[in-house]
Length: 126
Image 1: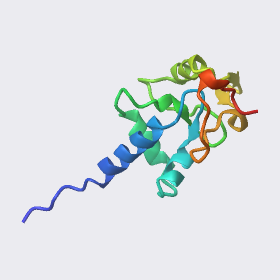
Image 2: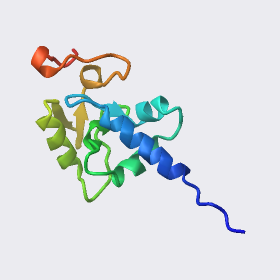
Image 3: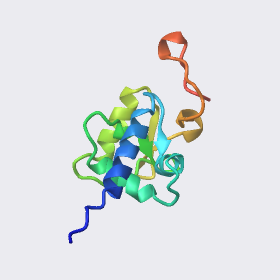
């Protein structure tokens, strides 16, 4: 008798994609924040793996590390690309210590807090 394939990784990836699609332009989330919202503590690296092969409609660039650093290690999508995409969304990205940084206190997405649309006076949090 053959066993049914384990779809748990695929289900996790799909849950990651669904959640990342909810992050609005102009905001970022952390890998740890994503797994916490999914109820899967200590799975931050899995989020990174999921985003390496995500569908085109998933805004992968909006996920950064817990210190506010762009920590992507993917030759197909270098850190410079992620920084450019975030800047295009109005996020201030700085470069220091040979890395790109985002101020989490200003741009971190709060999944529980409703956001005003940009046309209604949107401003990043300060």
